[in-house]
Image (tube, rainbow, N blue to C red; front, side, top):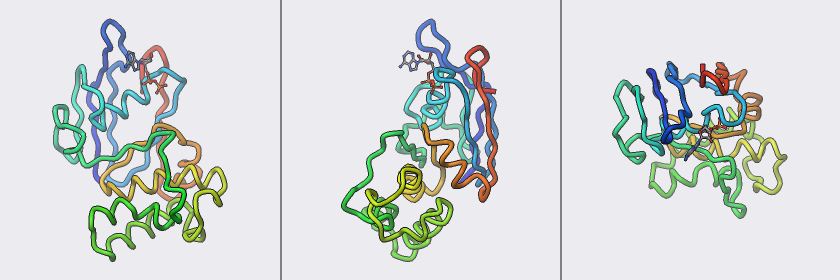
Length: 186
Ligand code: ADP
């Protein structure tokens, strides 16, 4: 994992300002949840961190490096979308480790990453189950775990915050940020 810093970050779509100067300092290993009404700029903020949106103003740093102009593939960051697909024919263990396996990472590293993610998500007793045999809550956390394994540095999720908070908040230490339609994320 690594630290992520946003300084006075804004996003404009033409005349419409979607993000109003967010300042955020996320420490190495910290678990942060952005909370706010629909349309207040949560997804846009995550997309700017991941590099999927240009930044209209301000600065985004990942690991102390300004990434404003860095393409997504060079940011070593993963993003889980609400409808992220799991591989239904694979077990929880195989889904979690799949990205590292195709990246040909050493077995020991894959095992370590998979075990860590499964423990955080409370899936360690369910490793041999397939996604269809999981409860809704467990199945919803699994994509985050898979992406977390794929990128050990940083993960963004566009939803499922309640599940992530329930599964990870107490163990990882969580911090919530609220945002309002008027002033953007605070
Ligand atoms: P949230 O994730 O908090 O629901 P978004 O970040 O998706 O909100 O959207 C923030 C604001 O930016 C909304 O008013 C939305 O309509 C607007 N917006 C998002 N994407 C675009 C886009 N591609 N073009 C124009 N406006 C956009």
